[in-house]
Amino acid sequence: MEIISNLFCLRAIFFVYNLCYKKPFKKLRKKTYHPKKTMSEMRIRPRQVLILIIVFLVVLLMVHRNGKRTCQGPAYLQAMYAKEQYEELPKIYAITPTYARPQQKAELTRLCHIFMLVPNLHWIIVEDSNNSTQLVRNLLERSGLTQRSTMLHMKTPAAFKLQNKDPNWIKPRGVEQRNLALNWVRTNADPDKHSIVYFMDDDNAYSVELFVEMSKTKPGHVSVWPVGLVGGLMVEKPILNTDQTQVIGFNSAWRPERPFPIDMAAFAISTNLLFKFPQAIFSYEVQRGYQETEILRHLTTRQQLQPLANQCRDVLVWHTRTEKTKLTAEEALSKQGKHSDDGLEV
Image (cartoon, rainbow, N blue to C red; front, side, top):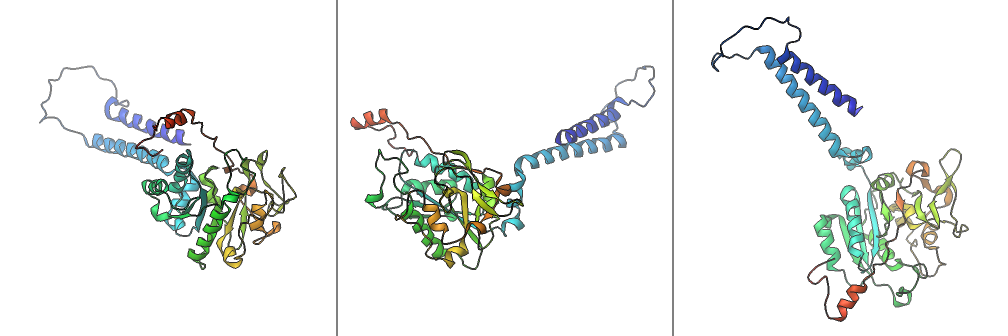
């Protein structure tokens, strides 16, 4: 339709050009010599003025339509940015545990772009540290997200800290950080306003559309959707009943007997449930892979889960993981008392 519209405009311009200058509807006359007129003797005919105005308006319309289409982006974002729609959107508290490592700034920078595009997101960054770091503070300031973010910090106990050669699944991660963020939400969120909590790990990949879907989470509900590249499968997803309105199971391959065999990125929680059930937190005293179940068992049942993302047919989040950076040359440089990033923040 866009191509047809533009072609129509171009044909209209060509038509009026012919009317103005080529005069196709007049009979050809024999050429006769006329002396050149001076500028004072030249006259612009009213018809030519009218046609030139029409051409100008058609061109202006084309530029306006194309520019409008380019700037607004996808339809799901257009609705979100509409003022009347934005004022009705529930606030989403996105909780991100993070820790210092060479690729930390790159991971958080990628997430920043999501927050820049989604106006109803509030970012709670919890660092695994004794203090908040300047790196994270600088990142938020440069991204213009200072007013829509909260910086927290909580050190993981040494007994539960992963060592360099430990596989990432051997110990629960982010327990202290997520619990601190949940306590902040229970203390600072308005219990009379509908809002949503989402656990947003810093190494996953997220579509902006996920947060549009997440905004549909109903008060008093936990919403769910598929997650790509997790649990040894291309996608882990809820299984719905025949009319696609209720979750009746999951397709998980790893420990499918879990009450909620889903990834941390697969659900969002209506905040009023956190006020209603203050005992809903994460714990070190659970089996491996049961952190999701540990919090959800206090809040909901399988039958009460709210399926989103086109009835759980769209994949809008992926459980990606950044490869550990190889810095052998940097380590050799460090032994000489030198660093490639002296004076830089990487």
